[in-house]
Image (cartoon, rainbow, N blue to C red; front, side, top):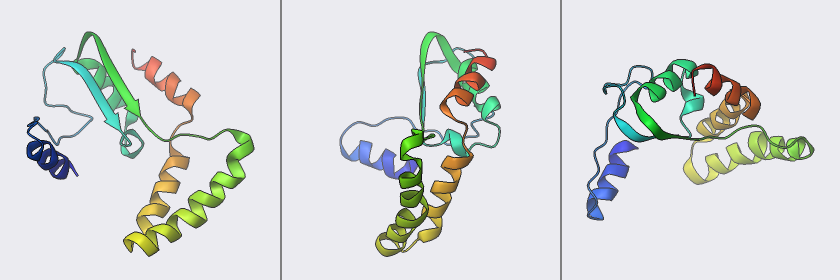
Length: 128
């Protein structure tokens, strides 16, 4: 995915450096970035606390960390969302992409990810 994104930026005339690395051991010096972001990736990291500590380490004082992630849904919508996630989404993945398993994994990984409050607590415990 990184190479596709990089290629699109280059094609649009916006070359941007891209690094593929271990989020738990970032190969950058302390206080290096103004902004660090992760989109739909934190839930796939084995040691979320270590990855967040690394983001904190490489961000400049006053910098911004942005985490875009799926999380728990409002309780009254839970049953409808579960039906969508575990029945409809994998079926659409099979029909459209020929890959039901990846969409089943998506639903399961969202369920395993901490709730909003749990993630907030983790973020605060690592030092943000």
